[in-house]
Length: 180
Image (cartoon, rainbow, N blue to C red):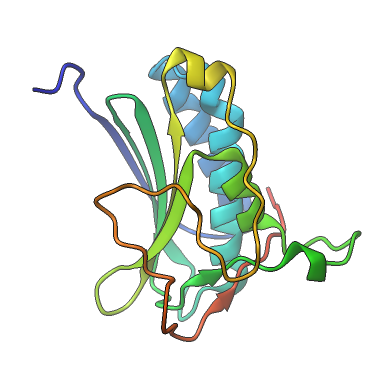
């Protein structure tokens, strides 16, 4: 039996810099409404990075859907787009110290409990991350995991199969240029 009802929010948009800022404000407002103020900064950062990747890399279009789902003690933020190429975490050793791109997914991995990407039907993908909502987990987030190129995050939903292992389709590079 579920003791707390789930909460859900969906926003469809074109991943353009001006719209990314609007979605960040929508995410913040929903989390305030759900009394999850301690998660606002991390959720806003994560959704900004995922939307920026859609803006920079998604083909054939920039249309995407942002979804927030609060279920029990976990907030899941996901971004669905029409580009089937799965993102790749770049080796941070290959990113120039003053580069403005190349750290987005590493930041998402560092600030979230878990994250991943999966194909969405025949065309498209979903990139998601989770944040714990329990009082102790919100107050003291786990230390950031160290990422190595080609390595998958070690924490995943048990019901979600990893999709970045083994043979890989053509990938969109995972880069970030925070906008809006």
